[in-house]
Amino acid sequence: MAVHGIDLGTTNSAVARTGPDGRPQVLAGMSGAPTTPSVVLFASGTEHVVGEGARREARLDPEHVCALVKRRMGDAEWRFVAHGTGWSAPAVSSLILKSLVADAAFATGEAPTAAVITVPAWFGDEERRATVLAGTYAGLDVVDVLSEPIAAALAYGFARLDGSPEMSKSSSHPAPAHETVLVYDLGGGTFDATVIELADRRISVLAVEGDHQLGGADWDERIALHLARRFGEQNPSAEDPMDDAAGTQALVLAAERAKHALSESTSTEVVITHDGARATVTLTRAELESMTASLLRRTVDLTRSCLAEAARRGVPRVDRVLLVGGSSRMPAVADALRTELDLDAKLHDPDLAVARGAALYGEKKELERMVAADLRTRGRLRDGASLEDAAPADLDDAARRVADAYAVPLSQVRRAVEVRVDTVVSRGFGVLAVNSSAGRLEPTWLVHRNDRLPIRTSRSFGTVRADQEVIALTVVEQQGQAESSRAEDAKVLVAGEITGIPPGYDAGSEVHVSFEMGFDGVLHVTAFHVDAGLPLTLTVTTGATLSQAEVARERDRLGKQRRRE
Ligand code: AMP
Image (tube, rainbow, N blue to C red):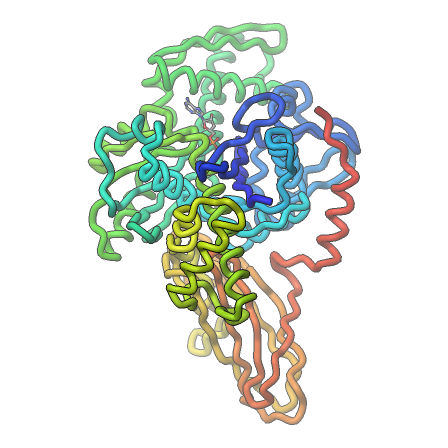
């Protein structure tokens, strides 16, 4: 019944849950590996393979192997076509999630039904919705989507209190009760920099920055291009390995292996065979670092602006830097943070911190839900009210009852209900409106990046003629680093119409539109006709929302897929 934590990563995924002692445990499937490559092989029209088997096959059957699907989340148009069927990004992701569910069931004997799924802090509303959808397709109740750096910070905060061996590895000093932490997360396909304040009972995100098209795969691509050039120099009459999909896949895999080797040693040899020819290329760490310097620089620049944003919010320095994500193992990362930003960075459980943190958060959500249910049945909490509205004595009694009933240590229940996780908006959003002086359509930004969540804001629109029944509404999200005043630079989240405005009202009658975003970063828009006192319907014509029927149809279709071991 436990809410599991799932790190649905760009290159690797993992599932965890908290054990009876409250510690987060990563659950491995039959292979025994703690992480599963986020790769799907569509073996036939009805069969698929997820994980290492699919990753191995990438070279032999590249057209049927889908990798890095997380980079496509939120792109409603994208499809991976295999055996004549198009797969959306949430559909492919749901197959990875189902594989993790099977692993968890193998490890514990109980298939998870509810989960917290992590997403990069930089994910906007549409990508978060796509993630929820993937979970729904996989048959999971997605209790929440949680930003990966918050998950990493939760795991760190827990290990710090717990005195776990992970912590002793990453720190030589006991951690103070109040710390400001920079999480530098460089994974396979995404980069996030986040400044988080860890206090006794509160974890607050102060600033986020990132790029979800930047990660280890970009390093692999640069190395692969270099290897292809060297291969060509040694074999001028052979075909370029990058000219076909299988040759490219083989080079990218060789590039990744070389990159891993160069995190340990300063030089490595790569053997490339293609088109009946062969080349041996010596690659040094210095060469690798020089051909990928611009990629690393971008992460440093984003980190710098994240620190600047935290400083603007009154936190001018960080106490600790946590390196998470597999690519932060490259020695150049810690070196650049030291030389460029004077930061002393340490690896912190780079592959599993996010899944562990998600499991801790899942447990918190589950215990909170039980405490709230206890209070409600006793009439100590109104429907719709949150735990923060409960009287402290009532909360303590309820925590005690839940601890007794479920044989969970009281300290664990108290920690779950007391620790608050505050986070911020990853991208600003607003509405498109006509700027009458400029005579063109422009975004009006209602909420700005790094504003604190949850957010509730509203805007009033007037009808322009009597008996107007419909108002068009376009909600847009910021795309780049800064808010732009050009409509073309914004991403349309919701393009729709507010319908059902009652007849009999003059021009200028007021329609009040509310925009709400909870801790999960998912936007909800509702509209209200002020004079009539009536809620109105928002009909979405494009945007990230699918109808219930569409979700059910897709889930049925996916249910017919068979997983091949
Ligand atoms: P993640 O998304 O956190 O699982 O990170 C996966 C990325 O980390 C992939 O691009 C890997 O190539 C990269 N990675 C894993 N181990 C290492 C290593 N030892 N050195 C360099 N990159 C690594």
